[in-house]
Image 1 (cartoon, helix red, strand yellow):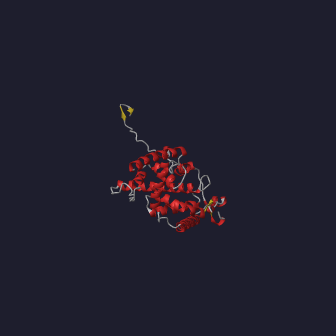
Image 2: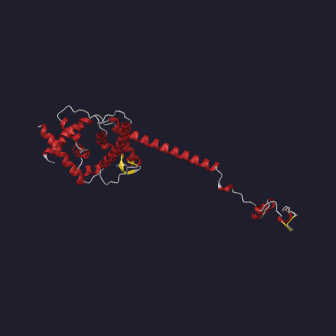
Image 3: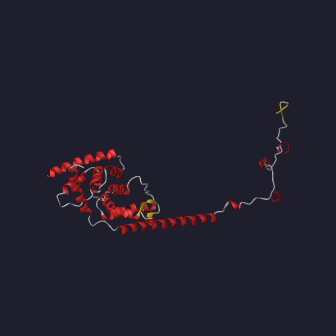
Length: 171
Length: 117
């Protein structure tokens, strides 16, 4: 970590360390935003602002990747809370609003598996993505999700069970 | 990880990678945007703080402060004012003399059966 690289309000984070995980952080943000490119970019930028201003302060209690993922997740949750409250307002005014987010259709044989992942309960879906797609341990993934490792393990096992069923049906 | 875990991982990471392929924006672009937003937020806050300071200063200058209190000189006060006891002001201006001012009652002087009525 070069001294000039270190963030003023976050002495344990460097610009180069963030750059190294940028792709993964963006992927995580993308899945938090239903694969909306612009929303994901804005979310990542907002996460960087939190780090730059020191509102989200890294104290080395986990890996930097786990920490930044948790920041993105928290920002996405508060953003969705705002969006959800706006939607409720719009619905109460009688406007027609699409109920479900539209997921891109997968053309290959993995489509059914992907659909199965999307149908999982939210926490199971999150831990599957973090462990299988973002190369995290269950401990780190639980840290990102803000649950204990035991709870994370339970979500992980349940998710795997549900997905194995889908894989068997595919065979 | 078991064999089925590996299969799951391979399948899912493949799908995920395809979904994200070519979509990751340049780090410098996002980072510069974040820094610009932080700077503009600081500038905006600075302007708000400056405006608040100016308003506070104007308020202090316009509204009379405690320094304007003037103490009255005792001698001057006694020379320019007259004093009377509060009970005096409550007294009626005309004092009614019940002996001098009560009208004399007209009494009949005629007798009735040798006696005055």
